[in-house]
Image 1: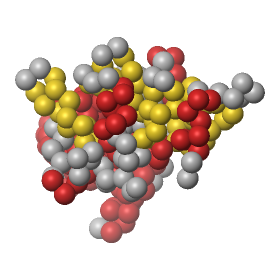
Image 2: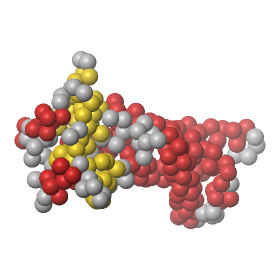
Image 3: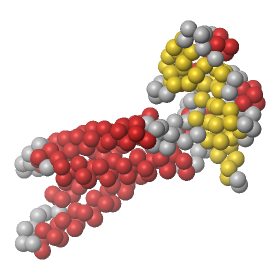
Image 4: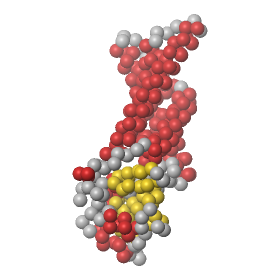
Length: 270
C-alpha cells in the first residue's frame, strides 16, 4: 500500500522557509539603511545599493540553505537525541552552514558587482571568517530553535475525506486537537494506557493501547516488531539479525529499535 504524501509537513516547512525569507529581508533592509546612515555620518558615504547587496545576498543564501538545515534538524532532533550527540552534531552543522553561507555569499556579491561594472572579491567574506562565524553561529542555532518550536506549534490541516481513515491520527491535547500524519510517524511505542508517536522530535503521547493502534494502522504500512512497538515499513533502512533470532531495526535516520523474533515474519514479508 502506498503512503499518503506528507502534505502537512511540507506545507509547514514551506511556510517556515517563507518566514525566514521575509524576516531576513526586513532585517537586511534595516541594516542596509543603518550602514548607509553611519557611513555618511563618518564622512565615508556609500550608495544604498551596496549595503543592500551585502545584506540581501546573505539573506538569499540563508534562505536557500534553510531546507538543508531543516532536514538536518529533523535527522538530529535537539529534544530527542542524547545531548552530547546533539551538541557535537550541531556544532559541525553550524560550521558547514557558515562555510557554505560565507562562500556562496561572496560569489553572489562578486556576480552582482560584475553585472554593474564594479568589482568585489568573492573571497572577501572568507578573509574575515571568525567574524562571520560568530554571526552565523547565532543565526544557525536561532533557526534550529525556531524550527523546533515551529514544528511543535504550527497546525497541520485535518485530512480530507478522500485521504482515507488512516491518513492521520487525531491526538487530543486538552481542548486542542492535533492531526498527526502517519507518513510523519516512524514508530509507535506502548506507554501504559498510552502510546508514544515518534516523529523525529520529542514523542507525542496519544491515549490508546498499542493493540488498538495496531488494528487502526493495519494496512497503513505499519507492522509490529515487538510486543510494545510498531514501526513504519518505509522508515526502515535495514534489519540486522542476532544469533538469538531477535534483530535490530535500523531506521533511515540512523536510530535503532529492538525487534523480537516472534514478530520477525511480518516485517520481512514483501
